[in-house]
Length: 144
Image (tube, rainbow, N blue to C red):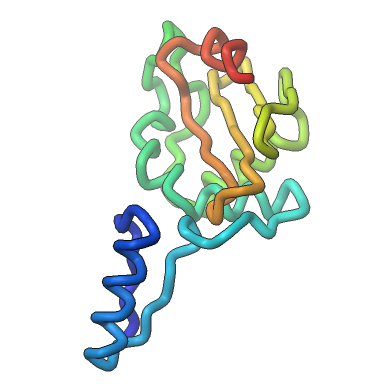
């Protein structure tokens, strides 16, 4: 039996729960979002890992054709899967409107056409996040 822990917080809770599960004979498989660090080295790998992390599940409703965020309607067809989301993200990573390095081994990529920000994070197992911020490019500009 494999158990995936996506919602656990804190090392102590991980250790306690893992000990309980092992005592019960379960195999504990940490989710990618809780891995020690991102292993992606290419735009394609970053896009795929981010799309299969929390970003698509949490933010997919922002990527619906016509969905207005910060007075900008999402211009593309609705993104209907993590695979489509990865393709969309790779396009932004390959040719962002703007990009910059951030603190803590992170980088930000802005796409003005869709109002999407991607933040890559070398310290996160899911390699970062992507979403359409409610305050648009202002949010991107505030990232340090």
